[in-house]
Image (tube, rainbow, N blue to C red; front, top):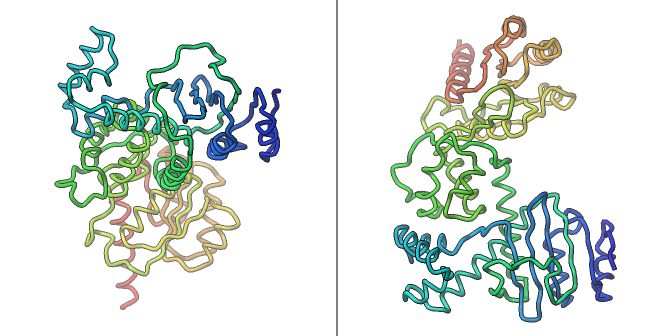
Length: 412
């Protein structure tokens, strides 16, 4: 029986409950967690295929446990695990891989035969590989699934190298770890919304001792952030699984060691996150000052807000110029930073409206330096105009000068 599930899980439950031969559906509706839990708790044995575009993974549910029959690629290859753990050096791994090519033996067997790991320790490392492949599914969006109740792989394809590895049939441990990762990934995505972004080192740390990160992961991943490689490419080239790479890049970015450029946003490379000002810098001593930050670019706005908060300011965010922003303008703020395409007449009108509503200083961030844009900027009533890519340090300096000047006027 084949069926297409509704937005609730009743049909899937019913299909599995009557030992359905085949159930297909949209993973976005059910969620990978619900699907795995239902298959596991319902003792439904067969093959689950998750597909996203041209990629797919196949998981087999058996009375003895869960098997990864095929993956897109091994998310966490055994050799990488052994190098990360210090069990192998890179040179030793290369020697083993060369031996593997000559003999056709599996790397795991060579590791055991060479006395590097016991069979039991090898099993733990292989289970880690399989678990990482399954965790990776929790990040797949716009995916479809197909569950076929069968004792043999319906595709007839050759199983992958990890198909003999068994994970516990009780998937609760996977669910708990996956839920923790998804919560963390939500925070990471607020700073790294797209794997096509390009990270670049701003400043090399003297020591990693202050970082709540895996030192080995930092030492492996940081050199890859060269301002040329995308995050996608760093994930491919790193020894570490995707989630660890994202977590490490996020941690380094939050600490101002990395900045991230978006080559697709607007006309040129735009810095969307830079190094936070050091305490005592140009923005220090501005506690109590509130800045209204208006931008339709959510990623850029969130990153700049983070930067300015680190400079000591309170930030109120608005999604460009709209009714909500007008209300915010009339509320308490000490300056307005407006990210806008100033070459348009609508943008000029918005700036003039802001100046009518609020007498606070207006700072414009524009992506255009054309003659019309500069002419509009002169007539906008703005105190300062910055052409992007934005130098965040200069913005903080100008804000500090602006508020220092205002304070002196107040004293007079």
